[in-house]
Structures are given as C-alpha cells and as structure tokens.
Amino acid sequence: MAIRIHISEWLGKKKWTQKQLSEITGIRPATISALYHETIKRIEIEQINELCKAFNCQPGDLMTYVPDEEYTPEQK
View 1 (tube, rainbow, N blue to C red):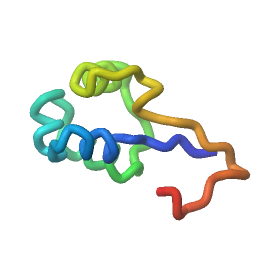
View 2 (view 1 turned 90 degrees about the vertical axis):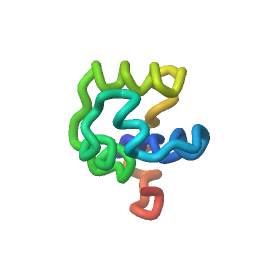
View 3 (view 1 turned 60 degrees about the horizontal axis):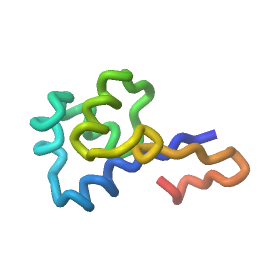
C-alpha cells in the first residue's frame, strides 16, 4: 500500500514555494520537504490541520490511498 501525498500539487495551485508553506503553517521546512517528496513516515494531526487551513481543503484532499497492486514507483 502507498499513501500518495498531494502537497506538490497544492503548492502548484497556490503558486507557493515550500518555504512559503513552512512560514504560513509553522511546519519545519524539512517536514514540508519530506511531504513534498513523499518520503515522510509519519504526520501529526496538528500538521494536517495547519495544511488544511493553509490550502482551505479537507484532509482527504491532501492524500489518497493506492493499493499495492495499483502502486508503481513511477507514481511518486
């Protein structure tokens, strides 16, 4: 299984940089980078809350589940 994280798409929609998102949300730049590159292993509920506030979205808009049989590394 893989959880796809859509931070890069949201940054593109808003035309924000990772640094700007970090400043808006108060989330460390390294964490934003890990989210952007989908290498993060764990995310706190408060971080999801801050991202939803910044992007004016629902938690489900930030990530999707991809079953193992449908996941390929190229999707990253």
